[in-house]
Length: 264
Image: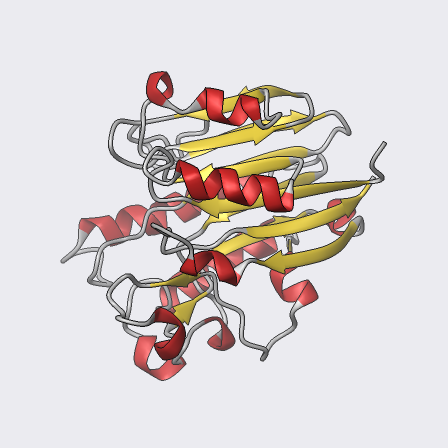
C-alpha cells in the first residue's frame, strides 16, 4: 500500500477537447486524485468512462454547459460531496469532498473578473471580489483538515508574475485582488504550498496566454493556480511539483497541472 497521497489540480479549459492530454498526464504521473477546473461540459457529457478505464472510478462532478465546471476524479473513495455557490448565481465553480483519511478537499474555479479592474465599469470584477469575500466568510468557519485547490485567478506575489510593474493594473495582479486574497489566506491561516516548497522570489508560474507566439521564449507567465492547506494538512506535505512541460503538449490548456504529495 502506498504511503503517500498525490493530489493534482489543473484548469483544463475543456475536458472533452483535451481528454488526450489528461489521459497522458494520468498515465505518466498517476496522481491519486485529480481536481479539474473549467471542464466546460454538463455532467451527462463528461468523459467519465475515459477516467474509469484509468482507475479513477470515484467521480464528483459539477458541470455547466460550455462554461465553468469543476470535477474531482479519484482512485480512492471519497464521500460527502458539496457544491458551494460562492458566485451566488448558480454557476458551477466549486465541488468538495471528504477523503478516506478525513481530509476535506475543496476544488474551486474563481471568476477571471473581466478586463477592467473597476467594479463600477466592469461588474465582473465586482463579482470576482464578492466571490472571494464569500470564500473568506466560509474559511473563517473551518475546523477540519482541509486542502483548498484550484484556479484562484489571482497571482499574489511580485515573483508570481513576469512583470510586477506592468501588471499592477491588469486583472489578476491588482492591489485590491492581492489584498483580498491575502485576507482569504489569513482567514484560516492557510499554508500556500506552492510558495512553501518554492519560496519567493523564485519564479513560479502556472499560466501562459495563448496570445504569445512562443510562450516559453517570451515566458510571460502568472501563478494563478494554487494549493492551500490548513496547518495540519500542510504538515503532511512532502513535495510540490509544477508540470510546466504540459504547456507544450498537443492542444494544451493555457494552465498547467500542479501536484502536491502528502505523507499518510
